[in-house]
Length: 80
Length: 517
Image 1 (tube, rainbow over the protein chains, first blue to last red):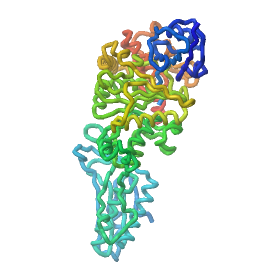
Image 2: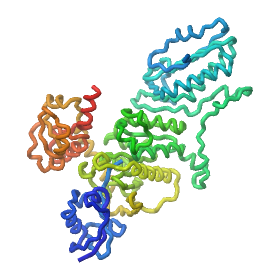
Image 3: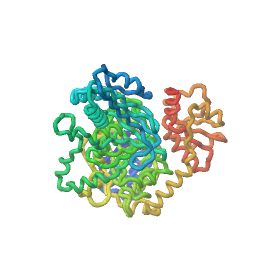
Image 4: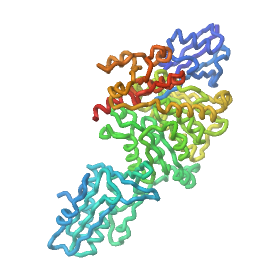
């Protein structure tokens, strides 16, 4: 199991009901982790509609997870 | 007695003349201002005067009182037109009667100079090309300022005072000259656009373009600080142009009353040095990114969601990332939500718009700028700002580069330019042979039913998957604003359904037509 810190923005924050959380996961890549969260948190957006950043750098979805990673899922927003 | 008046009809000069006849007057002098057919080398078709009537009447009266007291004339009258005027029409009439001709001439001159300078009346010129501009009177020569035996406290012309920013070593006179020469286009005069326009006008940016198709709604006022309660129902571009003219008359304002589209965006961007994207519309944001890349015009994007925002500068240079480098495809409107659906606190677009204004001034003045390209995530609840560097090699570069990607996207939009159709009444669409597909959610349909109109209901998120259920022939997709229906129509077209259209502006637009009609 890997322990990672998650941060949510915009509609993901709203749907999760929290801005951040720490999770322990069996997922091996960012994509697997997001799919897992999507089921648990009921996120409406597919991974392809999002950007993901790890430790303040944008990242590819197939990146493996490491203990202590800070992961941010970022949807595009349009309000003005 | 009121000597000054505003008139929306032709001026009765004979009546005014008669009112000024007085046994003690040995002279009468009048001035007439007419609409001429050109200004600044552009052919003018006509113009439009908008007055802040309450203030204009009080100020006009004060000017006439001043003229009478100052020159000792018998009486004076002035009428200023409002509304639409054609070339050759009388725009302003001034008449003075006095014991002797000299004071009549001088009082007449004083009145017209002060009227032009002080009255809150804005002039919009309509050009033969179909464009129009709000024209600010930047500096008016006033003869009486050069009369040495009189001093008058009102006779100080307004010249912008940029001393507080000139004092910055990085700005200085050279920076001010750069700002005065700069042309900045602001797309969207809402929550983000208000601070952008205010700060850029205040800083003395020479030309500001404003694009907005909306009229002011009461629900805008908690975040759109250029406007007030008396403005509701008016076009935002006109209101914003008026506010800018009042804030800094040295700024030239150009307005577009319809959103830009695939066929004109690149050309319009080319007329500006910098574009600031301030709409709440995802489609506009993608179009702006494409137009910035193709015209080589830098673009400052920002958007907000509830208590947070995003900011990205598209430098529009080779190897600099665009919006599509982050999110290649425009997301479906129902996936991104909006201020209407999700809510927003007023200061959130205020802060992000202020950051856009700051970025704009940094770019125009060549101020120090972080190296590299980044997406900024701003959270105003916990005051964190995340600075995420964007690697251009991971974006459009994988699909042929930003220019090729933008060109393809624009070509697709142009091919879809017959998607949007306007109907004053949905009955007209049915009569024209369209089958209606209502894409709204069940609760929206329940709140605003279409009543007796025949329509099939398929929520927008399902319509592509359920394309097989669509009837043959011409189809009109409808939703509340036209955004979901427009997006769905483009997706269905991409699947070969070429007879699919979208109701432009959605039910909100046809409802408004009904109310105003």
